[in-house]
Amino acid sequence: MSGVTTCLRFPGQLNSDLRKLAVNMVPFPRLHFFMVGFAPLTSRGAYSFRAITVPELTQQMYDPKNMMAASDFRNGRYLTCSAIFRGKVSMKEVEDQMRNVQNKNHTYFVEWIPNNIQTALCSIPPRGLPMASTFIGNSTSIQELFKRVGDQFTAMFRRKAFLHWYTGEGMDEMEFTEAESNMNDLVSEYQQYQDASISEGEEEYVEEEILEGEE
Image (cartoon, rainbow, N blue to C red; front, side, top):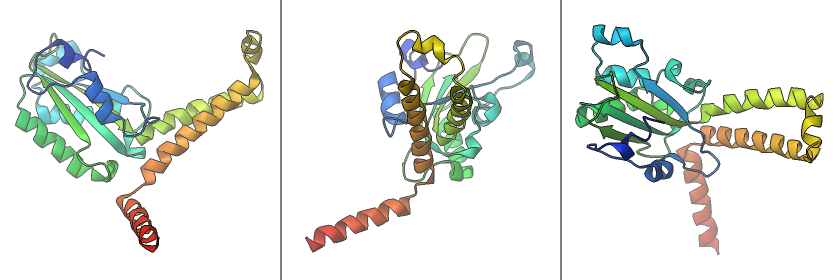
């Protein structure tokens, strides 16, 4: 939260606010669950022995080990990303590194959303660090987490475990069934956009043009 709200609290070269973040990061209303990462993740005692650079920060940011969500981005594709750098960093170097990462890992980014990486810079570093970066990613791999939760819920719900605590307070059993269905729909929607491609969209557009011409 500290990294995400940095641009609201401190001046920077390329500022971003929460509204702009929401507009750029959420291509579809239901797909608004983010994966957050932070770099560098090392002990305070090790900072004095390591020179932190922008390429190193960028590499660590995309590392699954630095993510706060238990899902691996390599099992999905990024719809949108945002990187917030803090400290004395060059805007050109940041842009170059982010572009390099996207070019090297283009299979992990959807091609039908152009310019889907947003960057923000704040000149004031976090306390005790020369520079740091916060990563926010809207990845379809988050569906792994929902699948795990859904499987655990299904196993317990089939046995009606702990259900009486909720029905005793006025909830209906059907509400749980609807919630399970909603979760499955969300997973299916993430998978749909993960598998989508530009060619599919072009085919649909051509079909629409043909239909309009016939009319």
